[in-house]
Image (tube, rainbow, N blue to C red):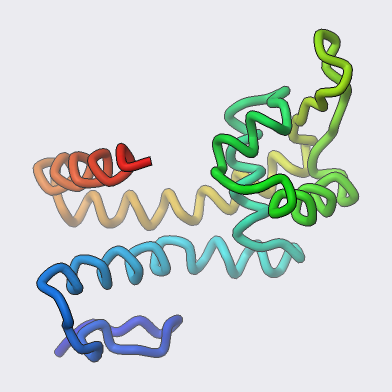
Length: 155
């Protein structure tokens, strides 16, 4: 019996295959959904969503990142960043200060509350990844990393 995705409400195998790569595309979609499901539920309880987590994730790994650099890393427009960023600042999950070198530039950093939320949301995702990698074994994990690096290099 095919595995199902309760979150998407579809059987993975229930979609017509229009191309020989459709099965891989569906696995990418359902895999992403499966990895982020618990994190997204946690974030929703915090009044946040996936865009908020993406911002927190990057800022956690690049403290004092300029807004322009954040936009570049996320690959989004300034307008797309504006609403989620403002909410994170209002909720005091991020701080913003002027750059001493470039006064027009603002630098972002996580607060302790922002660090906790980012850590917990990312922990949900890491747990799913760890379980999948344990199931796939070392060679499966290495193959997955190779495929994902090739896809990521498309950026």
